Amino acid sequence: MKRIQTIETRDLQKSTVEGGCGECQTSCQSACKTSCGVANQQCEKCLNEE
Amino acid sequence: MIHQYKLNGYNIVLDVFSGSVHAVDDVAYDIISMFKDYNTENIIESITSKYPDVTDEDVKECVSDIKELEENGKLFTEDKYADLAFVFKKKNTVIKALCLHIAHTCNLNCEYCFASQGKYHGERALMSLEVGKRAIDFLIENSGTRRNLEVDFFGGEPLMNFEVVRGIVEYARSIEKEKGKNFRFTLTTNGVLVDDEVIDFANKECHNVVLSLDGRKEIHDNLRKTINGNGSYDIIVPKFQHFVERRGNKNYYIRGTFTHNNTDFTNDIFHMADLGFTELSMEPVVCAPDDPYALTEEDLPVLYEQYEILAKEMLKREKEGKPITFYHYMIDLTSGPCIYKRISGCGSGCEYFAVTPWGDLYPCHQFVGDENYLMGDIWKGIVNKEKQDEFKLCNAYARPECKDCWAKLFCSGGCAANAYHATGSINGIYEYGCKLFKKRIECAVMMQVDKSLNK
Image 1 (tube, each protein chain N blue to C red):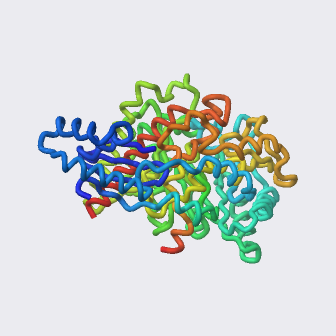
Image 2: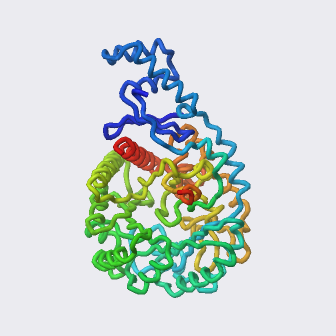
Image 3: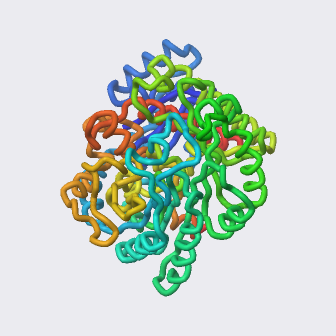
C-alpha cells in the first residue's frame, strides 16, 4: 500500500480463541501500584513460545 | 472505533478492537478520517482541493486500500467484546497474586504517602511469620490450576520486618514444587535498610525489586524525609547503585513519584539514568486535590509535553546504544496481553488481594484501612460477597465514561482505587489519570511505530 504502512500487532479478535489462560502478571502488582495499565504486560504464553 | 493522532512526525491510526496500528501519510490520514461519513466522490473532491498534486486515481487507490484493511479486520473493526467481559470475569474465581503488608510502619516519613507513613490510618504493626505462611497457603488453596503466583512484599517498609520476609520465602519455596506452583516474589523498598544480606537474598529469590527514588536530590529530599526530617537521597542512592550493579539481568525498577513540585519530571528520569539506572518508572502522585503538591489542571499541558520529550529522548538514546526503559512505555504490540486480559480490569478484589499484618484481606493495597472494603481474612477467606461481586463486575465495559474511549483496551477501565477516591465509586473514573494515561499510550505506540519503520 502506497500511503499506509501496517505495523505488526497481535490480532485481538483471534486472541478470543487462543487467550485467557490467566498465567500473566496481575496488572499493577510488582510495579507501579498506583495506576492500571494492562498494555505494558507481556503474554505469558507468547513469552514461552519465544 | 479508530483513534488518529499526529506525533513526532508520524500520522498514526489505531484500530481499537483489532489492536492494529497503521502509520499513514497526510493524504491517507485525511481520507481515513472522512471514510465513514462521506462517499468516495466527496472524499475525492475534498482531498484533491487540499492536495493539488493528488489525482482522483490516487484517492480511489487509497480508498480501495482502506476498504481492504476493513475487510481484513484491521480497520474500523467492530466491538465484539462487551458481553465477553462480564461472562469471563464472573466465571474466573482463582486468586493469583497477594500484596503482603509485611510492615505497617516505615523508617521514612514521606509527605505524599498514600499509606500515611506506612500505618494505613491504623496502628503500627508487623506481620508475623505465622500470618505470612498462612497467606501463602491461602494463595495456593485459592489458585486453582494457575501455576505462576505472585507475592509482593510491601509496606510501609518491608525491610523493617526482613526476617519474616525471609521466612515466608523459605516456606513458599519448600512447598511450591509439590503443589505445582511457581512463586514470583517482588520486594518494594525505600532502600534505607538495604545491605549486602538483603541484596543477596533479593537477587536470589525476588523476580523483581522496586526501589523508590524520586529523581534529583532536591526533589527527592523535599518529600522523602527521614523521621528526623532530613532528606534520604544520600542514604539510599549508593545502596541502590550497589544493589542494581549486583542484580545482573534480573528485573528491577527505580520507581519515582512526581508531583506539582516537579512537573519537569523528565529531568528526574534522566537523573536516574545518569546515576546508572536503566529500568525506570515514574508515577503521577495520587493524593487529595487540596494537598499542596497535588497536580493541577494547569499542569496538564506541561505534563503532556514532558511525556513527549521523554519518548523522543528514549528513541534517541536507543539509537545511540544506551537505551533506558520506562515502565509505561513498555508496549509489546506483537506479544502483549490477549483480549481477556484487556477487558478484565486490573484484578483487584478478584485475582489480587492485599493482606494486612494481621491477616485481613482487602481488594488491593490502596483500599487497606477502609473498613467498607474489608473482604474477609486469610483463614475464613472472602466473606464480603457483595463487595466481591462489585469487583467482579468492574471491567473495561463497566463505566459509561469508557464507552467511547479508544484507550479502554489499554487500561482495562483504569484503577478501581483511583476511581473510588475520585468519585466515591469503583465504577467511576479518575479523569485526570485517564488524560495522562492516554498521552502515555500515544507516546508508547509512537515509539513502536518509529522502531518498526526504522528497523
